[in-house]
Each structure stands twice: as C-alpha cells, then as structure tokens.
Amino acid sequence: MRGARSLARRRRVRTRATVSSREVVLGVDVGGTTIKGGVVGIDGSPVTTGSLASPDAGGSALLASVRGLVVDLEADARAQGHTPIGAGVIVPGIVDERGGRVLYAANLAWEDLDLATELESSTGLPVAVGHDVRGASLAERRVGGARGLSDFVLVTLGTGISCAITTDGTTRVGASGAAGEIGHTTVYPGGETCSCGKRGCLEVYASAGGIARRYHAAGGEPNASAATIGERVDTEELAARIWQDATDALALALATLVLL
Image (cartoon, rainbow, N blue to C red):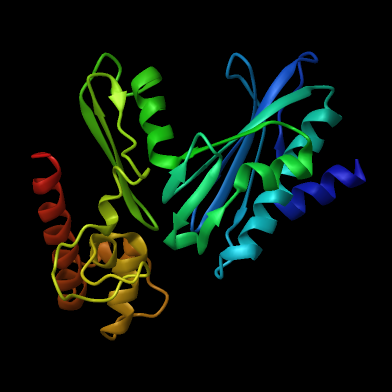
C-alpha cells in the first residue's frame, strides 16, 4: 500500500476496482503539455489511468518521463493481477507508424527517435507508435461523431495544431508521414518564426501556446492561458486583437484544407 501511494504521488496513477485477472494493453498520449496514459482490457474497459506534466525542454527529458509512466502503468496493472500484452503510444509530428519511429516532432524536440525500441527495451512489451490525431480520428470513426462517415477531416487545437484527413474510408498518411500537419502550413508569408524553423506557420498564431506567447510578447499578463485570453476578447483590446489574428489564421488554413 505504501508503494501504491508513492506511485500515485509521482505519476498521478489512479487505480480502478479490479473485477478479475485478464489480459490488458497500455495506452499513452504524449503531448507538449501533458503525458496521459491508461490501461484497458481487450474490451476497452478501463483498469487504471495516469498523467504527468511534460518537461518544458522536451527531448531526452520527455522520453524519460514517457518511459517512466509506461513502466509505472505496467507495474500497476501487474499488481492488480492483470497481464499486459502490449502498448500503444501516440505522438504529434511526422511519424513512421510501421517503423515505430518519430521522424520529427517540433513541440517535443524529437527527431528520428526510435520510440518503439526505446519503450520495448524498458518493458519487454511490443509497442506500437502512431500519430495522435490519426489515432483520435480512428476513435471518432469507430465510437464518436464520425461513425458512418467515409470522408471527413478532424482538426485538433492544443499545444500544436494538426488534422487527420479521411477519404474513401482511409486516413491518409502521405508519402513522408506528414499528411495532416496543417499546423506548419504557411498562413502569413514572412510572418513570425515557428519552432519548426519556418515563418508564418498556423501554429504560431492559432495554437494555444502561440496565442499565449503572442499575448505575453505584446504586453499582456505573463501567466494568462489561451482560454483566459479568449474570455477577455469582449473587454480587452489586446486580447481581441490576438484572438482575431488566431481565428483569421485558422480560417485561412481551413479554407485551403477543404479544397484539397
């Protein structure tokens, strides 16, 4: 019990009541702000969940955090008498899903990372690596708002911006794995510099991080989040201007996207 309490404090792992021993799988969503994970049965029923903040620097520190959460989730499942048989990890960026590699993820400071091998060496479990928004799109098609649809686009706004494009029932990956990376399309040529090295990218203006950064740089409250800035658009000129820039940039990108 003491070890379980320590685990909960360190990784915020929450355990659910155990009904019976069974085979389970681990799932982890790696984001630029938060790493979220869970253990589920083959039927999708939840066993345990956990989360922790992503290190600001990303890179090797982030990899260590992901590895730690995966190991903790596996240990928690085994402590309940379950048998983990594999893990799935989704990440943003350009992903080689067949090879289990993250080719480039600007918001994570990862480049050419063999994520599957890194995690398999820590757990001994087979690990599948996928793109976060393509994974979300699959979930929406199976159990969410896109059920019954064979052509749709899912756009996600968060630390970064991305989308999944599904046509004729197939979610498109692209020749280099970059299909759907709408956050790095140029909406303002010669605009502000993006973390990817380009200028004028959609993420610079319309992502949660971009909105907050531009607001702070223009003299706004240093700790204000994008959500807080959005709440101020009717009462504060600076918030309204930053928010308008974001919506204009997003509208430009979406207008292009629907014509592809």
